[in-house]
Image 1 (tube, helix red, strand yellow):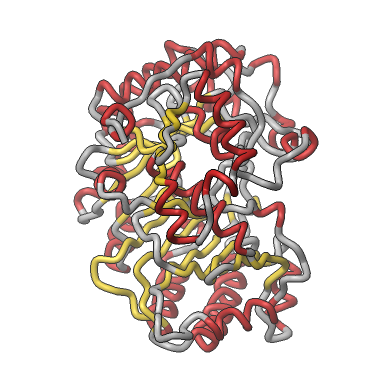
Image 2 (cartoon, helix red, strand yellow; image 1 turned 120 degrees about the vertical axis):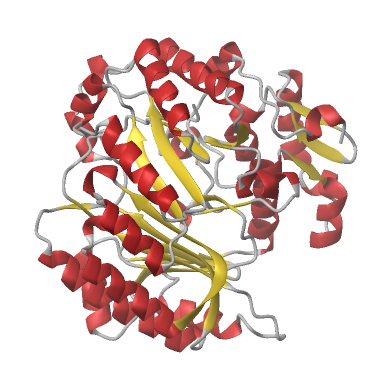
Length: 467
Protein backbone atom coordinates (compact mmCIF):
# COMPACT_ATOMS: atom_id res chain seq x y z
CA UNK A 1 0.00 0.00 0.00
CA UNK A 2 1.10 3.62 -0.42
CA UNK A 3 2.89 4.98 2.66
CA UNK A 4 0.05 7.43 3.30
CA UNK A 5 -2.18 4.44 4.07
CA UNK A 6 0.38 2.12 5.65
CA UNK A 7 1.30 4.46 8.53
CA UNK A 8 -1.25 3.05 10.93
CA UNK A 9 -0.64 5.65 13.63
CA UNK A 10 -1.91 8.48 11.42
CA UNK A 11 -5.35 9.79 12.32
CA UNK A 12 -7.46 12.66 11.05
CA UNK A 13 -10.66 13.68 12.86
CA UNK A 14 -13.22 15.14 10.44
CA UNK A 15 -16.16 16.11 12.65
CA UNK A 16 -18.45 16.99 9.75
CA UNK A 17 -17.87 13.58 8.20
CA UNK A 18 -18.37 11.79 11.53
CA UNK A 19 -21.58 13.70 12.21
CA UNK A 20 -22.95 12.86 8.78
CA UNK A 21 -21.99 9.18 8.70
CA UNK A 22 -22.48 8.23 12.37
CA UNK A 23 -24.97 5.37 12.78
CA UNK A 24 -25.69 2.34 14.93
CA UNK A 25 -23.35 -0.60 14.60
CA UNK A 26 -21.50 -3.45 16.37
CA UNK A 27 -18.10 -3.12 18.06
CA UNK A 28 -16.91 -6.37 16.43
CA UNK A 29 -15.24 -8.00 19.39
CA UNK A 30 -16.45 -11.00 17.42
CA UNK A 31 -17.92 -11.75 14.02
CA UNK A 32 -20.65 -12.86 13.83
CA UNK A 33 -21.71 -10.80 16.83
CA UNK A 34 -23.09 -12.46 19.98
CA UNK A 35 -26.70 -11.59 19.16
CA UNK A 36 -26.45 -14.12 16.29
CA UNK A 37 -25.72 -17.03 18.63
CA UNK A 38 -28.33 -19.81 18.78
CA UNK A 39 -29.45 -22.16 21.55
CA UNK A 40 -29.09 -25.16 19.22
CA UNK A 41 -25.36 -24.81 19.90
CA UNK A 42 -25.14 -26.24 23.42
CA UNK A 43 -22.74 -28.00 25.79
CA UNK A 44 -22.74 -31.12 23.62
CA UNK A 45 -21.87 -29.08 20.52
CA UNK A 46 -19.03 -27.50 22.46
CA UNK A 47 -17.70 -30.86 23.60
CA UNK A 48 -17.61 -32.17 20.03
CA UNK A 49 -15.54 -29.21 18.86
CA UNK A 50 -13.11 -29.44 21.78
CA UNK A 51 -12.53 -33.06 20.79
CA UNK A 52 -11.48 -31.86 17.32
CA UNK A 53 -9.15 -29.03 18.36
CA UNK A 54 -5.95 -31.10 18.26
CA UNK A 55 -6.72 -33.17 15.15
CA UNK A 56 -3.72 -33.05 12.86
CA UNK A 57 -1.27 -32.58 15.72
CA UNK A 58 -1.84 -28.83 16.00
CA UNK A 59 -2.20 -27.75 19.61
CA UNK A 60 -3.17 -24.12 20.01
CA UNK A 61 -2.29 -22.40 23.29
CA UNK A 62 -5.16 -21.16 25.41
CA UNK A 63 -6.49 -17.84 26.61
CA UNK A 64 -8.59 -18.02 29.78
CA UNK A 65 -11.26 -15.45 30.62
CA UNK A 66 -12.94 -15.38 34.06
CA UNK A 67 -16.05 -13.23 34.49
CA UNK A 68 -16.52 -11.96 38.07
CA UNK A 69 -19.95 -10.26 38.02
CA UNK A 70 -20.11 -8.63 41.47
CA UNK A 71 -19.93 -4.89 42.28
CA UNK A 72 -20.46 -3.05 45.58
CA UNK A 73 -22.20 -0.09 43.98
CA UNK A 74 -24.04 0.65 40.75
CA UNK A 75 -22.44 2.94 38.15
CA UNK A 76 -25.41 4.36 36.23
CA UNK A 77 -23.71 4.22 32.80
CA UNK A 78 -22.80 0.53 33.05
CA UNK A 79 -23.95 -1.92 30.37
CA UNK A 80 -21.99 -4.93 31.68
CA UNK A 81 -23.50 -8.11 33.07
CA UNK A 82 -23.09 -7.47 36.80
CA UNK A 83 -24.66 -8.21 40.19
CA UNK A 84 -24.82 -5.35 42.70
CA UNK A 85 -24.39 -6.64 46.26
CA UNK A 86 -22.53 -6.01 49.49
CA UNK A 87 -22.93 -9.64 50.56
CA UNK A 88 -19.40 -11.05 50.29
CA UNK A 89 -20.60 -14.61 50.94
CA UNK A 90 -21.98 -14.63 47.39
CA UNK A 91 -18.42 -14.49 46.13
CA UNK A 92 -17.52 -17.64 48.07
CA UNK A 93 -20.33 -19.61 46.38
CA UNK A 94 -19.38 -18.20 42.99
CA UNK A 95 -15.70 -19.12 43.24
CA UNK A 96 -16.65 -22.65 44.30
CA UNK A 97 -18.69 -23.03 41.11
CA UNK A 98 -15.97 -21.34 39.01
CA UNK A 99 -13.42 -23.85 40.26
CA UNK A 100 -15.79 -26.70 39.37
CA UNK A 101 -16.28 -25.30 35.86
CA UNK A 102 -12.51 -24.89 35.54
CA UNK A 103 -11.89 -28.52 36.46
CA UNK A 104 -14.56 -29.70 34.00
CA UNK A 105 -12.99 -27.64 31.20
CA UNK A 106 -9.53 -28.98 32.05
CA UNK A 107 -10.78 -32.57 31.97
CA UNK A 108 -12.32 -31.93 28.56
CA UNK A 109 -9.32 -30.09 27.08
CA UNK A 110 -6.68 -32.29 28.68
CA UNK A 111 -4.77 -31.41 31.85
CA UNK A 112 -1.67 -29.22 31.55
CA UNK A 113 -2.71 -27.23 28.49
CA UNK A 114 -0.53 -24.15 27.86
CA UNK A 115 -2.09 -20.81 28.81
CA UNK A 116 -0.49 -17.72 27.25
CA UNK A 117 -3.17 -15.23 28.18
CA UNK A 118 -5.47 -14.84 31.17
CA UNK A 119 -7.95 -12.09 32.01
CA UNK A 120 -10.22 -11.45 34.98
CA UNK A 121 -13.06 -9.10 34.08
CA UNK A 122 -16.39 -8.08 35.48
CA UNK A 123 -18.09 -6.63 37.36
CA UNK A 124 -15.26 -5.97 39.79
CA UNK A 125 -12.81 -8.90 40.05
CA UNK A 126 -11.34 -7.48 43.26
CA UNK A 127 -14.75 -7.91 44.88
CA UNK A 128 -13.19 -11.28 45.74
CA UNK A 129 -11.20 -11.19 48.96
CA UNK A 130 -7.53 -12.19 49.00
CA UNK A 131 -8.19 -15.80 49.98
CA UNK A 132 -10.74 -16.29 47.19
CA UNK A 133 -8.41 -14.78 44.61
CA UNK A 134 -5.64 -17.13 45.73
CA UNK A 135 -8.03 -20.08 45.58
CA UNK A 136 -9.06 -19.29 42.02
CA UNK A 137 -5.51 -18.74 40.77
CA UNK A 138 -4.21 -21.86 42.56
CA UNK A 139 -6.95 -23.93 40.88
CA UNK A 140 -6.00 -22.43 37.50
CA UNK A 141 -2.35 -23.39 37.96
CA UNK A 142 -3.35 -26.84 39.18
CA UNK A 143 -5.16 -27.62 35.91
CA UNK A 144 -3.28 -25.52 33.34
CA UNK A 145 0.33 -24.62 32.57
CA UNK A 146 0.64 -20.85 32.70
CA UNK A 147 3.66 -19.96 30.58
CA UNK A 148 6.38 -17.64 31.81
CA UNK A 149 5.93 -14.05 30.58
CA UNK A 150 2.35 -14.68 29.51
CA UNK A 151 -0.18 -11.85 29.32
CA UNK A 152 -2.07 -11.98 32.62
CA UNK A 153 -4.41 -9.04 33.18
CA UNK A 154 -7.10 -7.91 35.60
CA UNK A 155 -9.67 -5.10 35.67
CA UNK A 156 -9.49 -2.91 38.78
CA UNK A 157 -11.83 -0.49 40.49
CA UNK A 158 -9.32 1.86 42.21
CA UNK A 159 -11.87 2.63 44.94
CA UNK A 160 -11.78 -0.97 46.19
CA UNK A 161 -8.07 -1.87 46.09
CA UNK A 162 -5.35 -1.51 48.73
CA UNK A 163 -1.58 -1.56 48.17
CA UNK A 164 -1.55 -5.01 49.80
CA UNK A 165 -4.01 -6.32 47.20
CA UNK A 166 -1.82 -5.02 44.37
CA UNK A 167 1.16 -6.81 45.95
CA UNK A 168 -0.91 -10.02 46.09
CA UNK A 169 -1.98 -9.69 42.44
CA UNK A 170 1.66 -9.39 41.39
CA UNK A 171 2.61 -12.41 43.51
CA UNK A 172 -0.21 -14.39 41.87
CA UNK A 173 1.26 -13.66 38.45
CA UNK A 174 -0.78 -10.74 37.12
CA UNK A 175 1.39 -8.39 35.09
CA UNK A 176 -1.16 -6.08 33.44
CA UNK A 177 -3.77 -3.93 35.10
CA UNK A 178 -6.72 -1.94 33.73
CA UNK A 179 -8.23 0.87 35.82
CA UNK A 180 -11.69 2.31 35.38
CA UNK A 181 -11.66 6.11 35.72
CA UNK A 182 -14.30 7.41 33.25
CA UNK A 183 -13.91 11.08 34.32
CA UNK A 184 -12.28 12.91 37.24
CA UNK A 185 -14.80 15.78 37.19
CA UNK A 186 -16.72 15.61 40.54
CA UNK A 187 -19.96 16.79 38.87
CA UNK A 188 -19.79 13.98 36.31
CA UNK A 189 -18.93 11.43 39.00
CA UNK A 190 -21.96 12.41 41.05
CA UNK A 191 -24.21 12.24 37.97
CA UNK A 192 -23.17 8.63 37.27
CA UNK A 193 -22.84 7.49 40.92
CA UNK A 194 -19.11 6.80 40.76
CA UNK A 195 -17.18 8.97 43.21
CA UNK A 196 -13.47 8.32 42.69
CA UNK A 197 -10.67 10.69 43.63
CA UNK A 198 -7.57 11.28 41.55
CA UNK A 199 -5.42 10.20 44.51
CA UNK A 200 -7.18 6.81 44.78
CA UNK A 201 -6.33 6.16 41.14
CA UNK A 202 -2.74 7.39 41.37
CA UNK A 203 -2.12 5.28 44.46
CA UNK A 204 -3.05 2.08 42.58
CA UNK A 205 -0.84 3.12 39.63
CA UNK A 206 2.11 3.74 41.97
CA UNK A 207 1.57 0.37 43.65
CA UNK A 208 1.34 -1.41 40.28
CA UNK A 209 4.60 0.15 39.08
CA UNK A 210 6.34 -0.65 42.36
CA UNK A 211 5.31 -4.29 41.94
CA UNK A 212 6.53 -4.77 38.39
CA UNK A 213 3.32 -4.60 36.35
CA UNK A 214 4.30 -4.41 32.67
CA UNK A 215 1.30 -2.46 31.43
CA UNK A 216 -1.11 -0.04 33.08
CA UNK A 217 -4.27 0.94 31.20
CA UNK A 218 -6.86 3.60 32.03
CA UNK A 219 -10.47 3.62 30.76
CA UNK A 220 -12.31 6.89 30.11
CA UNK A 221 -15.82 7.52 28.76
CA UNK A 222 -16.97 10.52 26.72
CA UNK A 223 -20.62 11.55 26.42
CA UNK A 224 -21.49 11.20 30.13
CA UNK A 225 -23.90 13.61 31.86
CA UNK A 226 -22.45 16.97 32.96
CA UNK A 227 -19.36 16.54 30.79
CA UNK A 228 -17.86 19.64 29.18
CA UNK A 229 -14.81 20.46 27.09
CA UNK A 230 -13.15 22.23 30.00
CA UNK A 231 -13.87 19.46 32.48
CA UNK A 232 -12.73 16.64 30.19
CA UNK A 233 -9.54 18.54 29.27
CA UNK A 234 -8.72 18.66 32.99
CA UNK A 235 -9.31 14.90 33.23
CA UNK A 236 -7.10 14.23 30.20
CA UNK A 237 -4.30 16.36 31.65
CA UNK A 238 -4.45 14.40 34.91
CA UNK A 239 -4.49 11.08 33.08
CA UNK A 240 -1.52 11.99 30.88
CA UNK A 241 0.40 13.11 33.97
CA UNK A 242 -0.25 9.64 35.43
CA UNK A 243 1.55 8.25 32.34
CA UNK A 244 -0.41 5.03 31.64
CA UNK A 245 0.88 2.68 28.95
CA UNK A 246 -2.55 2.38 27.31
CA UNK A 247 -5.75 4.40 27.22
CA UNK A 248 -9.25 3.52 26.12
CA UNK A 249 -11.79 6.28 25.47
CA UNK A 250 -15.23 4.75 25.08
CA UNK A 251 -18.33 6.35 23.66
CA UNK A 252 -21.17 6.38 26.20
CA UNK A 253 -24.17 4.83 24.46
CA UNK A 254 -27.36 5.95 26.22
CA UNK A 255 -29.74 3.01 25.76
CA UNK A 256 -32.02 3.08 28.84
CA UNK A 257 -34.64 0.80 27.29
CA UNK A 258 -32.01 -1.97 27.17
CA UNK A 259 -29.85 -1.18 30.22
CA UNK A 260 -31.97 -0.37 33.27
CA UNK A 261 -29.24 1.41 35.32
CA UNK A 262 -29.09 4.09 32.61
CA UNK A 263 -32.65 5.13 33.45
CA UNK A 264 -31.16 6.92 36.46
CA UNK A 265 -29.23 9.24 34.17
CA UNK A 266 -31.02 12.50 33.38
CA UNK A 267 -31.06 12.84 29.60
CA UNK A 268 -31.15 16.64 29.77
CA UNK A 269 -27.72 16.50 31.46
CA UNK A 270 -26.09 14.62 28.57
CA UNK A 271 -23.78 16.78 26.41
CA UNK A 272 -25.26 18.00 23.14
CA UNK A 273 -24.19 15.94 20.09
CA UNK A 274 -21.79 18.66 18.92
CA UNK A 275 -20.22 18.98 22.37
CA UNK A 276 -19.78 15.21 22.49
CA UNK A 277 -17.96 15.29 19.15
CA UNK A 278 -15.83 18.20 20.31
CA UNK A 279 -14.85 16.24 23.42
CA UNK A 280 -13.83 13.29 21.23
CA UNK A 281 -11.79 15.56 18.95
CA UNK A 282 -10.11 17.15 21.97
CA UNK A 283 -9.27 13.73 23.41
CA UNK A 284 -7.72 12.47 20.17
CA UNK A 285 -5.60 15.62 19.73
CA UNK A 286 -4.52 15.72 23.38
CA UNK A 287 -3.45 12.07 23.41
CA UNK A 288 -1.68 12.10 20.06
CA UNK A 289 0.10 15.34 21.00
CA UNK A 290 1.25 13.56 24.17
CA UNK A 291 2.83 10.82 22.03
CA UNK A 292 0.19 8.08 22.18
CA UNK A 293 -0.42 5.98 19.08
CA UNK A 294 -3.97 5.42 17.83
CA UNK A 295 -4.42 1.64 17.78
CA UNK A 296 -8.00 1.61 16.54
CA UNK A 297 -11.61 2.03 17.66
CA UNK A 298 -11.15 3.70 21.06
CA UNK A 299 -7.65 2.47 22.01
CA UNK A 300 -4.39 4.39 22.31
CA UNK A 301 -0.97 3.14 23.44
CA UNK A 302 2.58 4.36 23.87
CA UNK A 303 4.79 3.62 20.84
CA UNK A 304 6.77 0.98 22.78
CA UNK A 305 3.69 -0.75 24.23
CA UNK A 306 3.11 -4.33 23.06
CA UNK A 307 -0.13 -3.38 21.27
CA UNK A 308 1.61 -0.68 19.21
CA UNK A 309 4.53 -3.00 18.45
CA UNK A 310 2.16 -5.83 17.44
CA UNK A 311 0.28 -3.49 15.12
CA UNK A 312 3.50 -2.34 13.42
CA UNK A 313 4.54 -5.97 12.97
CA UNK A 314 1.14 -7.08 11.64
CA UNK A 315 0.39 -9.30 14.67
CA UNK A 316 -2.45 -7.35 16.27
CA UNK A 317 -5.69 -9.23 16.96
CA UNK A 318 -9.13 -8.35 18.31
CA UNK A 319 -11.21 -10.50 20.67
CA UNK A 320 -13.88 -10.20 23.36
CA UNK A 321 -11.52 -8.27 25.65
CA UNK A 322 -10.58 -5.78 22.89
CA UNK A 323 -7.21 -5.59 21.13
CA UNK A 324 -4.71 -8.35 21.86
CA UNK A 325 -1.26 -9.57 20.82
CA UNK A 326 -2.30 -13.25 20.87
CA UNK A 327 -4.06 -14.22 17.65
CA UNK A 328 -3.67 -18.00 17.68
CA UNK A 329 -5.22 -18.83 21.06
CA UNK A 330 -8.43 -20.69 21.68
CA UNK A 331 -10.41 -18.74 24.26
CA UNK A 332 -11.93 -20.68 27.18
CA UNK A 333 -14.49 -18.53 29.01
CA UNK A 334 -15.54 -19.23 32.58
CA UNK A 335 -18.26 -17.71 34.70
CA UNK A 336 -21.74 -16.36 34.18
CA UNK A 337 -22.37 -14.87 30.67
CA UNK A 338 -18.74 -15.42 29.56
CA UNK A 339 -18.10 -15.97 25.83
CA UNK A 340 -15.41 -18.30 24.49
CA UNK A 341 -14.02 -19.35 21.11
CA UNK A 342 -12.82 -22.83 20.17
CA UNK A 343 -11.81 -23.34 16.53
CA UNK A 344 -14.60 -22.06 14.23
CA UNK A 345 -17.13 -21.79 17.09
CA UNK A 346 -18.32 -19.38 19.77
CA UNK A 347 -20.08 -20.35 22.99
CA UNK A 348 -21.69 -18.32 25.76
CA UNK A 349 -22.51 -19.35 29.32
CA UNK A 350 -25.88 -18.73 30.95
CA UNK A 351 -26.44 -15.07 31.80
CA UNK A 352 -28.30 -15.67 35.06
CA UNK A 353 -26.53 -16.93 38.15
CA UNK A 354 -29.20 -19.47 39.05
CA UNK A 355 -29.12 -21.15 35.62
CA UNK A 356 -25.31 -21.14 35.68
CA UNK A 357 -25.27 -22.85 39.07
CA UNK A 358 -28.02 -25.32 38.10
CA UNK A 359 -26.07 -26.57 35.08
CA UNK A 360 -22.92 -27.12 37.14
CA UNK A 361 -24.95 -28.90 39.83
CA UNK A 362 -26.03 -31.31 37.07
CA UNK A 363 -22.33 -31.75 36.14
CA UNK A 364 -22.99 -30.04 32.80
CA UNK A 365 -20.99 -27.23 31.27
CA UNK A 366 -23.14 -24.09 31.69
CA UNK A 367 -23.32 -23.24 27.98
CA UNK A 368 -26.50 -21.40 27.00
CA UNK A 369 -25.91 -20.79 23.30
CA UNK A 370 -23.27 -20.45 20.63
CA UNK A 371 -22.52 -20.67 16.95
CA UNK A 372 -20.58 -22.75 14.46
CA UNK A 373 -19.14 -20.51 11.75
CA UNK A 374 -19.44 -21.50 8.11
CA UNK A 375 -16.87 -20.76 5.38
CA UNK A 376 -18.51 -17.41 4.56
CA UNK A 377 -18.46 -16.34 8.24
CA UNK A 378 -14.77 -17.21 8.49
CA UNK A 379 -13.65 -15.14 5.53
CA UNK A 380 -15.77 -12.18 6.63
CA UNK A 381 -14.40 -12.48 10.17
CA UNK A 382 -10.84 -12.38 8.81
CA UNK A 383 -11.64 -9.29 6.71
CA UNK A 384 -13.14 -7.44 9.69
CA UNK A 385 -10.12 -8.44 11.82
CA UNK A 386 -7.70 -7.10 9.21
CA UNK A 387 -9.53 -3.79 8.88
CA UNK A 388 -10.03 -3.34 12.63
CA UNK A 389 -6.41 -4.12 13.49
CA UNK A 390 -4.38 -2.92 10.51
CA UNK A 391 -6.66 -0.59 8.48
CA UNK A 392 -5.82 -2.44 5.27
CA UNK A 393 -6.02 -5.79 3.55
CA UNK A 394 -4.51 -7.51 0.54
CA UNK A 395 -7.16 -9.05 -1.70
CA UNK A 396 -4.61 -11.55 -3.02
CA UNK A 397 -3.90 -12.89 0.47
CA UNK A 398 -7.62 -13.69 0.85
CA UNK A 399 -7.76 -15.27 -2.61
CA UNK A 400 -4.94 -17.62 -1.57
CA UNK A 401 -6.07 -18.34 2.00
CA UNK A 402 -9.79 -18.82 1.28
CA UNK A 403 -9.75 -19.96 -2.38
CA UNK A 404 -12.02 -17.14 -3.56
CA UNK A 405 -11.98 -14.45 -6.23
CA UNK A 406 -12.23 -11.44 -3.89
CA UNK A 407 -13.61 -8.97 -6.44
CA UNK A 408 -16.29 -11.39 -7.61
CA UNK A 409 -17.17 -12.78 -4.16
CA UNK A 410 -17.53 -9.30 -2.65
CA UNK A 411 -18.81 -7.42 -5.70
CA UNK A 412 -21.79 -5.98 -3.77
CA UNK A 413 -19.59 -4.92 -0.85
CA UNK A 414 -17.01 -3.28 -3.13
CA UNK A 415 -19.78 -1.24 -4.76
CA UNK A 416 -20.78 0.03 -1.31
CA UNK A 417 -17.15 0.77 -0.40
CA UNK A 418 -16.78 3.01 -3.45
CA UNK A 419 -19.17 5.45 -1.77
CA UNK A 420 -16.84 5.56 1.23
CA UNK A 421 -13.94 6.06 -1.18
CA UNK A 422 -15.72 9.12 -2.60
CA UNK A 423 -16.09 10.39 0.99
CA UNK A 424 -12.34 10.03 1.49
CA UNK A 425 -12.52 7.18 4.01
CA UNK A 426 -10.89 4.56 1.80
CA UNK A 427 -8.39 4.05 -0.97
CA UNK A 428 -9.32 1.13 -3.23
CA UNK A 429 -6.87 -0.39 -5.71
CA UNK A 430 -7.06 -3.62 -7.73
CA UNK A 431 -4.89 -5.29 -5.07
CA UNK A 432 -5.68 -3.52 -1.77
CA UNK A 433 -8.32 -1.97 0.46
CA UNK A 434 -6.80 0.74 2.65
CA UNK A 435 -8.45 2.94 5.26
CA UNK A 436 -7.28 6.55 5.15
CA UNK A 437 -6.39 8.57 8.29
CA UNK A 438 -9.78 10.29 7.85
CA UNK A 439 -11.60 6.91 7.77
CA UNK A 440 -10.05 5.37 10.87
CA UNK A 441 -12.48 6.90 13.34
CA UNK A 442 -15.28 5.36 11.25
CA UNK A 443 -13.74 1.90 10.91
CA UNK A 444 -16.90 0.29 12.28
CA UNK A 445 -18.91 1.74 9.36
CA UNK A 446 -16.45 0.21 6.90
CA UNK A 447 -16.51 -3.20 8.62
CA UNK A 448 -20.31 -3.19 8.63
CA UNK A 449 -20.25 -3.35 4.84
CA UNK A 450 -18.86 -6.90 5.14
CA UNK A 451 -21.39 -7.97 7.80
CA UNK A 452 -23.92 -10.11 5.94
CA UNK A 453 -26.26 -10.07 8.96
CA UNK A 454 -26.70 -6.29 8.78
CA UNK A 455 -29.00 -5.68 5.87
CA UNK A 456 -32.00 -3.91 7.42
CA UNK A 457 -32.54 -0.80 9.52
CA UNK A 458 -34.15 -2.95 12.20
CA UNK A 459 -30.97 -4.95 12.59
CA UNK A 460 -28.89 -1.78 12.92
CA UNK A 461 -31.17 -0.39 15.61
CA UNK A 462 -30.16 -2.94 18.25
CA UNK A 463 -26.61 -1.52 18.41
CA UNK A 464 -25.09 1.64 19.86
CA UNK A 465 -23.90 4.62 17.82
CA UNK A 466 -20.50 4.24 16.15
CA UNK A 467 -19.28 7.55 17.61
